[in-house]
Amino acid sequence: MSTGTALEHDNASKDSWLRQHRVRTALWIAVIEVILAAVTASISKYTIIALGLIAIPIYLIWGKDQRDTIRHVSWIAAASQALAIVAVLLSHFIGLFVLVLAAIFAAVALFLIFADKG
Image (cartoon, rainbow, N blue to C red; front, side):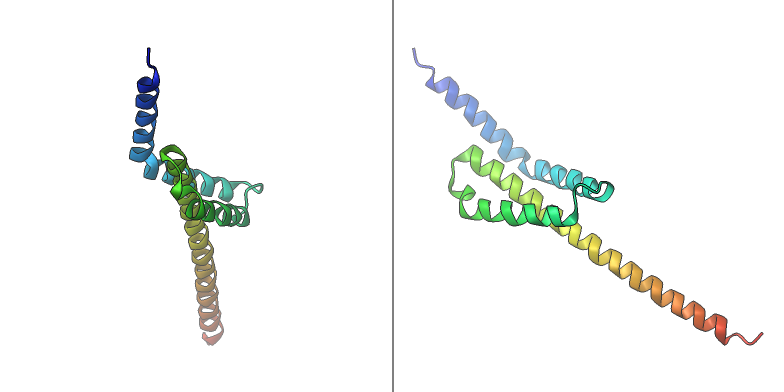
């Protein structure tokens, strides 16, 4: 009796599922992580960047040379952290841009108010 083929088939189906859903899974992990960072104080932007600085090199140095399941899981971890870092940086720079824009509008409004002689 050989059960090796059943185990191989089960492992192959898991690898196939991971391969097919890894982008979607990475996106959802990144979305959940960024939302948690935005609404809680326990997960900060620096935590997300630190996790990315760990997960991405692990995949690049070790994970991409591993067997299917480990390679896919490490890819999902690295991709989700990279996406979360992009979201954090965009929110930082867009937030800064909005503050600069608000300061410009306030300065123009003050100029118009004080320049009005009426």
